[in-house]
Image 1 (cartoon, rainbow, N blue to C red):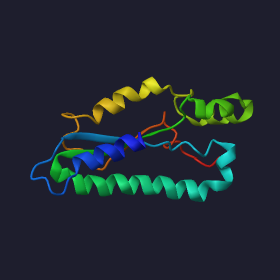
Image 2 (image 1 turned 120 degrees about the vertical axis):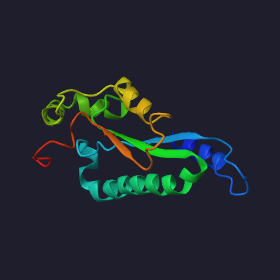
Image 3 (image 1 turned 90 degrees about the vertical axis):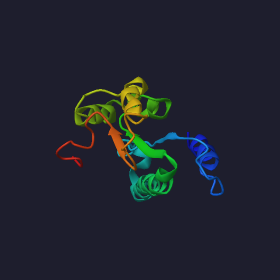
Image 4 (image 1 turned 135 degrees about the vertical axis):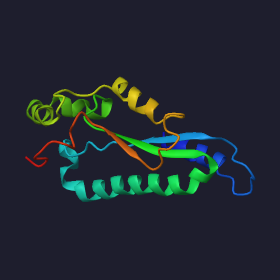
Amino acid sequence: MKTLSLEFGLLAVDNEAETPRVSGVISQIEDNFVRGNPTLQNQMFFVANTEGGVVQLVKALANEWAPRSINVNAMAPGCMATDNTAELRKHPERSRQILERALVGQWDELSELVGAAVSLCPPASDHVHGHVLVVDGGWLVEVDPWH
C-alpha cells in the first residue's frame, strides 16, 4: 500500500502540469494496534512517533494535494485478525486482555474495513481531507486504556 500510494502520488502531483493528471482519493492504511503486541511493549516511544508521523503526513499531503482534486485520508485499524497478529492471538492471557478491552469483544476481520474504506471514496469523501478514520472496535474509546 505504501509503495502504491507513493507511485500514485508521484503520478498525480506533477508540478509542471496545468491540470491534475488524476483525481480521487489516497487512503493509507496504518496499524495503530501495537500496545497489545508484547514484542513492541518496550518500543512504544518509537511506535508512537512513527504513527504520529503517518498522521502528520496524511495532513500535509491533504493540504498539498487538495488543490489538485486529490483527497488524502487514512484508516487506522485496531485488533485485526491478520498474519501479523497470529502469534498474539495464540497467547491465551494476552488475547483475553485484548478482547476484554475492545468494546466489540472480538478480533476484527479485514472485511470489516470495507465500509470505512468506501466512506473515504468519492463522492462521499469530497469534503473529507486529512482525516484518520479509526476502525478499531472501540479500542481507543475504552475508559481506562492503560489497565
